[in-house]
Length: 163
Image (cartoon, rainbow, N blue to C red; front, side, top):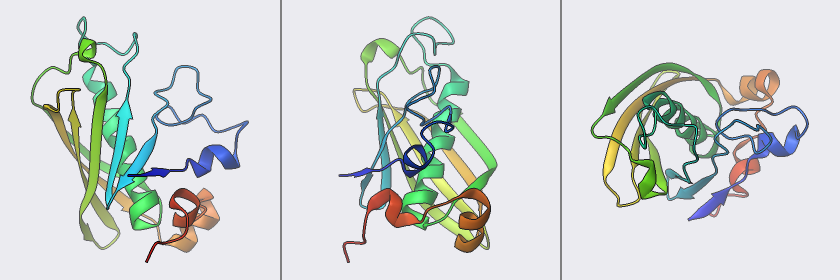
């Protein structure tokens, strides 16, 4: 696996406060990401305060994490950024925090026009998939992503292409 660089956090250390991935957001999730081929992987250690029921990761937090992984698939795989158009989550079983590390995997499964669909699985430390999500992003052409949203380009996240 190859670590993905949080280029947004490097560009804007003083102002970047993304709830999902900013290392500076005191209440954020502090998610980090890696590439396994064309799959974005995030391993996250649960902390107290993100529960719904006792010892169960809140469903809204799971949805947020799925959306975040999907956005990183755009940054690091598709080579652009976008906005969430649709998010569907299927909760299969409780994700117990006491089991430890949560593993998310997201991969692009389709594109249609500007729409990019990312499939995300969220598994517990035992590898049991506890929820799945399909996230549709409305992706921006790279020149608009750069001009309007300061998207620095795929290489800023993953380095030069290995091809």
